Image 1: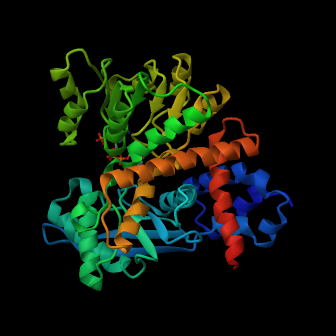
Image 2 (image 1 turned 30 degrees about the vertical axis):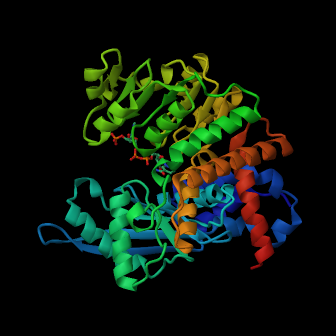
Image 3 (image 1 turned 90 degrees about the vertical axis):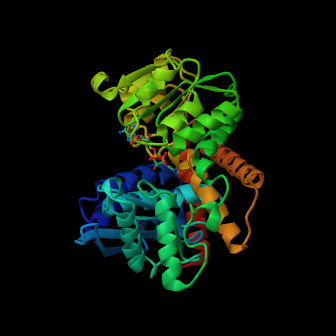
Length: 452
Ligand code: NDP
């Protein structure tokens, strides 16, 4: 039988909230990619695989009551979407941000299933968080919030059940408070969260993993496509947070020339290559503007977001060989993509989640630009989280070298797997479809083997 995507979405809308637009969009995109391997597949049909994979195992929603610095009780919403545990314990970050809702988390948890499957490690897919905004809160408020959040969440997680990590608004400080609360409530010192500090069970290379991984992935994909490597090539990077910083660092290790970075207020261009030490010292305090960089490096240019041309991020009109969008979703649109193409860009690798709009991705695919989708390219973070789980389970701490080697292998394998899938299904360089098919097949085949 042929997969009817419209009907599948209609049925999903009946049981979900009809305003789950991000989630329905993500499901539609994945179903469109995997349609060729679903159509007329009698085994998948007999096991109702499509419906099973688009339906979350459970969505946990709870109240978080906490006390602020004025001794007032505040209320927030907490969530954990445990989407699928076919391949391993539920795994995915916690996001604390005012925009968090069930739709966003369902979409992220759904995507996480396939990203985690691509790593080849035993990981299911999940996501969670709260509409709590840590940005304007004191340390004590954040600690009290994390404790209240964990009072509810600890009932549903465990080292072999569901292992949350950080995401936007949840860094190593928040993970520490959450882990401390879990330990106090359960008396268990187990790897129930990843992204912990080394002091209490964290892994080396976890902070670097997503940025390093994106560059390892890029090098392998270039090699598989018989294209030049990154050495001596001009690269654009956006963002100046965790992923961007370590992407720049790894590009330097490979003797590439990263010439840009950005934040939510503006774009920085240094034709001699970004001075990473200077950038890190400025961004130690996130409130600092990137403009400070030009005080030391007079030849560098800073463009404030207010001076951007309408509907255009000025970063993407700089000539380059490779672009690594590492800041935020939808930061690179169709016009930016056309600029990159006309200025000679040959490869775009998504370090952030969904930084390129669907129209921008079409420009890349239609113009033979090598495009590495987030699901594959930024899987390094969750891969090292899985390595943290292994270390915790064995009560060990591996060396920097050992973790880095494993990360490198995992990212090369992801490149190879999606390259092979693209060949097998005659997808050309459409690694968006290839990543979806590769991830989906791993989960679907395991679902069949495990039975209902
Ligand atoms: P950080 O919070 O450390 O950094 C985000 C960066 O993006 C900051 O420089 C921030 O600037 C900038 N930024 C935010 N909004 C905008 C905007 N509208 N325009 C331009 N720049 C903006 O996050 P991470 O580096 O950890 O994550 C970046 C992306 O990578 C996210 O999409 C995340 O989901 C994804 N990701 C991260 C992983 C990880 O391991 N950290 C793993 C997989 C994916 P400012 O400081 O001004 O806010």
